Image 1 (cartoon, rainbow, N blue to C red):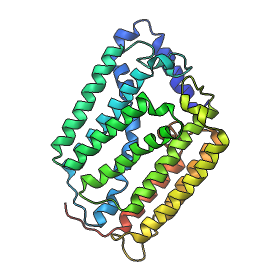
Image 2: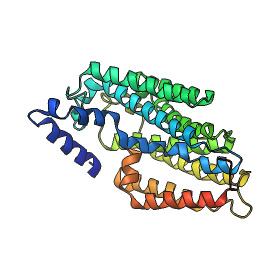
Image 3: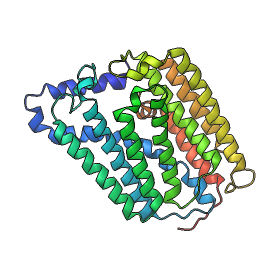
Image 4: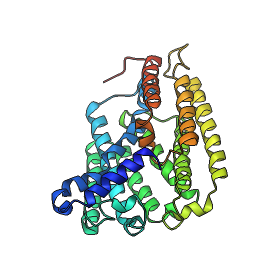
Length: 314
């Protein structure tokens, strides 16, 4: 069992055993339901922005900020809804049984109300952005992830594709927030990377001994298949990104491939960690536990900004 999981289990157990936990830590439990650490996945919203700006995108900090907050609210709405749907299964899981809803520190009624409220907030914020595409993307994200929570995660490959859609919608949202059209290569690259992360998650489920009772779709996977699929998606990600940079209209001549080495290293390092340590259940945990990936991501961001045609219209 990985160190982040062990630490989470111990924290949850200590919290549950506190004599007045339900009364004393209600706000902490709500915070755990929202899972703010996982808002880090919204880095996918920011990823296409340097290239979009170099290709004539318009950066409005108000619109960008409100779009990011809307996506964070949508993320938390889905997480709370998922915990409500999975409450009975989570009670049989060695770690997830300590989650606020599964442990009954937060009632299921409260979880449903909180999830609905967050979803309404997310859509309202999207409307305030005054961009129809932003509203459509936030609504699509919530709808597809609800489908995943209710039924999709029980079906092999369907679960992976629905998880992938969540990351691709984030990329599309980033383009919409700066009024730029996503290129076909960008969509292919982001889809391959998102599928890579989703497959790594399923592999971690199998390696971690998760049963089909808790995750029915695992009955349709084998470790060999997931290992091969991971290699395929990793290769697709690297090739698609290289082609995206080659075709990029907003990149400076001679600098088209400056950011490519960081992508190659990042994908291969993530793959190495998945195989060597059996991590991957949470991309956030993998990222935060690997300084090499943080340095690589920072290097990519610098290289990307140095590669695009600036200044842009603010």
